[in-house]
Image (tube, rainbow, N blue to C red):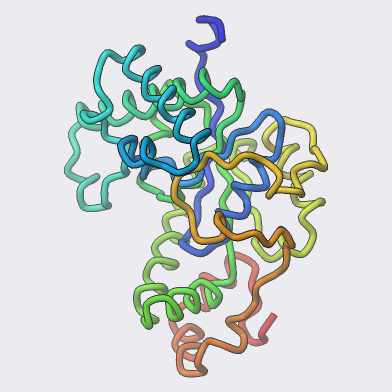
Length: 283
């Protein structure tokens, strides 16, 4: 990649959302495009762990990224801050700390683009704090996909995984409210809301709309998301599964106890309604 291209802002599609919103699936679908590289939860990157990966092609790719990063920035990756700060930490950060974060992540994105040759990178870290910081960076040209899902499904996923209604509800609530506030910082042309249920019910049409938003042509190969090399970081166990069928997961309708459904109705129905979900039925 020539120097003029490498100095351009990196085109990044950022997937914003709550945990268990379907970001791993969307990242893998976008990764199937010839011009796109899905990075999944890139803010959790650990180069040392990647170097020990059984996936030799992935280990080699990230080794090259590391070398490119060190060459471009003149600093070791051990000094880098890629992980987003907590909300309380972010409030205390100085302008200098924010600039360092943006510098490190901007260089990481440029290094990945240089090594991969892809023109668009997908960051599905989902964190609103990370999005807020990246939006201030001159190194990144952002398009935001706000991936929404019925809050009851997200609460159910946390209930199944951790046995807690409170944890899932508060994380869903915080993510949803922050997204409403963050949207005002972006032009309509740079923000797209996508529903998990629509994506999984009709992936072709939703991907066509997403590709149009990003500025690329839809490719049918995207639907065969297991056929493409997956170099992403983190994500849920779906990345290691072999199932390639896309289907709507509405297990919450049977799995979520009625007491939790009632709690959600009382505490979260207002936000669920804002995002287009009917609350008096199971639809």
